[in-house]
Structure formats: structure tokens, C-alpha cells
Length: 258
Image 1 (cartoon, one colour):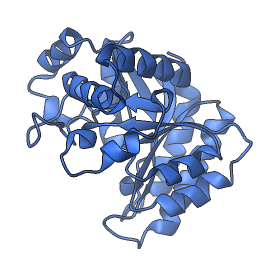
Image 2: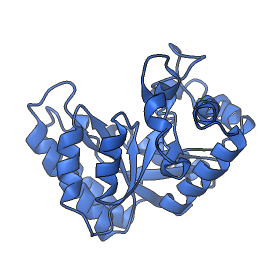
Image 3: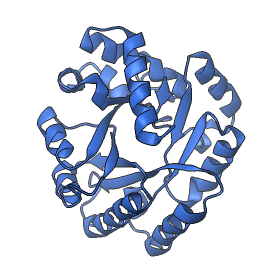
Image 4: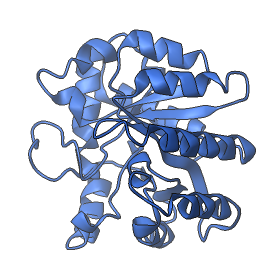
């Protein structure tokens, strides 16, 4: 399995990161992709990717909530562009980028500007994008629609919209949809979405340390728990976890050139 979205470099794992990684390897996690947030945590992400270069793959990007109330967002964005040229470790994508209007719409215009700048970088450097969208799917559709035919590709992380929105997004680029612990929640409704999406369009993710799947909901999430997501998708698609693993791993390797 590949955990395509893990913040295992975050402070929540400082006391037992080595043990957490070992549990992931023991659970069959072949690789994990490390989405960037901003300059505060980026050094830890690069360090982990350098320590485990065959298993931990770094990205670079400015998260939308890191733009809110940040007078230095221009500097942060310039840093992302500079790292696209001279990062200390290979980069496998531009992310985590996007729009997040859950807390406030006051910063929408700035978030949109930062999103478009990073989508342009992804196209310029031929990298996939990892897109965060929260309470902003119509706005995100408007954004990616401006790139139709330009080769935009990547994944909508923690996808939480309906199948109709998925189809609309697919008209504007080569996208997959990241499915994590929420699909295991009893009343999330994601089972009704996942059943109508082909396996070839799905990616496994944890978003560690967040969105912990059942049966560990309420505790810190970790990459080893991606197996519970895999099992739930298999149940929904009436197939085997082995097949879900094989298909999603192949898709992840293709998208991120692993």
C-alpha cells in the first residue's frame, strides 16, 4: 500500500516516529507521500525524506490556511517557487495547496491567488498537485476549469463532495480522489460516493495524524491505519483488499512518478 498523504513529520510523532514508521512497514505500507504545509514544518519534512529516501517522498507547497492572517504569505509563496528549482531532496508534487473556507471567507481572494500561482508552478515543472478543498468545491471547480487542456494532474485530497462534482472536476484535468478515514465513519455518506467512483480513480491516504479511521477513531492517526481504509473500499466495491491495494498503488506510482 501507499499512503499518499501523511504528515508523519509533524510534532505529534516526535516521541515515537521510528516506532510509527516500523508499524507502517510491518502493515505493508510500501511508501508514504509527505505533503508540505509551510516553512514552519518543512525542515522536518525534508529531513524525514532524506533519512528514508526510498519510502518517504517529499512535496512542496503552501497550505491555504497558512495564508490566513499571514502578512508574510508573499515570502512563503516565493519560497515555494525557489524550492521547486533547488530543493534539498527530490520533489514528487506540488502540495498541499488549495482553498479552505471552513473557518472564514475573509481570505478567499488571497487563497485563490496563492492557489493559482502554485497550479502554474505545477504545470511549469510538470508536477502533480495535491489539492485541499474544504467548504469550497464550487470555487475550486471554477479555479481548475481555467486550466482545462493544459495538462493539470494530481489528486483531490480527502475528497468530500459528491460524484457529480467529481465528474465535473475530471473534465478539467487528470485527477484522482484521495480517500481516507472518513470513509469508515458510519454516517459520513462517503460509501455512496466511493461506490460510484472506479477504483482506478481512487488513492489511499491517512492524513496522519488527523481523520483517524474506525476502529481507532478518536486517537492519533498513523500510516499503518491506511489498511482500514483499504479494507473499507474493498467492502464497498465488493472486491478484495489485495485488489484495492494493487490498483491504488499502481495509480499512485503513475501519478507521482514513483
